[in-house]
Amino acid sequence: MAAEATDFEPYLLGNYAKPALTLVRGRGLRVWDSNGREYLDFAAGIAVTGLGHSHPTWVARVQEQAATLVHCSNYYRNLPQGKLAKALVERIGPGKIFFCNSGAEADETLLKLARLHGRARENGLEGKRYKVICAKNAFHGRTFGGMAATPQEKIQGGFRPMLDGFAFGELNDLASFAALVDNQTAAIFVETIQGESGIHACTPEFLRGLRALCDQHQLLLMFDEVQCGIGRTGKFLACQQTGVTPDAVGLAKGVGAGFPLGAVWIAEKYAALFTPGTHGNTFGGNPLACAAGLAVLEVMDSEKLMENVNTLAPDFHQMLRVLVAEVSDLVTEVRGQGFIIGLQLSTEPAPLVAALREAGLLVVPAGGNAIRLMPALTATAADLDAALAIIRQVFRAWKPAAK
Image (cartoon, rainbow, N blue to C red):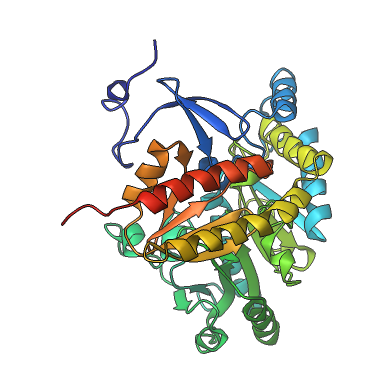
């Protein structure tokens, strides 16, 4: 018998809004709820299930590893960890990898890297160079370090005082970042594409300017690609669209395609800042997680998923823009790259998210009255057409509730 929502409520912490449905099964871009109803999934678990649900290769590799060696801690080597680290370095550039479980942990590692870099700049003295410059409307997770780097009341409210050492410039305004650099600054840290705030991309010119600014002042340039990385823009990293190479980048979500896995790439020049005992993670890089990550890369290569994004996304974006012209009183802009897309609404997104769900399409709301569309990288033209048909149907029929 399917579990009812009331079966969960007495036992789960109330930190999430009450879910609208209970999902019990997924295959490809389709999921089914506890009542047997089918949905087209353009949420992808918030940009996680890049291979779709239960991809047969991913399932097989995880099952094989689960029957071989699940966990051993980082007191010992494990073969999948080394293979995945090598594969990520080959795709990103010379450097080293730290494995963890989530995007928040990846970002926390980057903030610790900034502190270590600042200490090295000050000949081993702590507390003199530690400031990190981030962007307004950023989202870097819900740890205390991540919250301090996230200047949003909905994230910080109730948890003050925040950690010291953060300043915030305007996204795509290089002068606002340059004005914040001082002798306490250790790093600049931005999302290449801001996800939670509504899909706002850094321009190539802005990223190139940040690179030059960091080089000028010997600062670390760190990118958060937790949501926009792992092929979602049609390149392995979104920053590779611009030709700008950071000194470190945080990854998660799509890197495990559903298995909790985060990773940090650090350029060779700075990798030695971490020495034994400076950081750690019990589960990070365990054999089962890394087998899942290796399966992601295997499928991305064998099925040419980034090529799929680059082939299908331009037409999908254009069809969305045509639709926007038809319902311009409701949707004002299409933003994003590849399969990470934001629809800017003129109204609060929750009712439209609910209406789309009722019509059979799952999407994700975002800050600033936006809706995110983040299909699996395996999406077909037929999947995109089906999603567009539902969006068109709901948006054309939309009538806001009477006040």
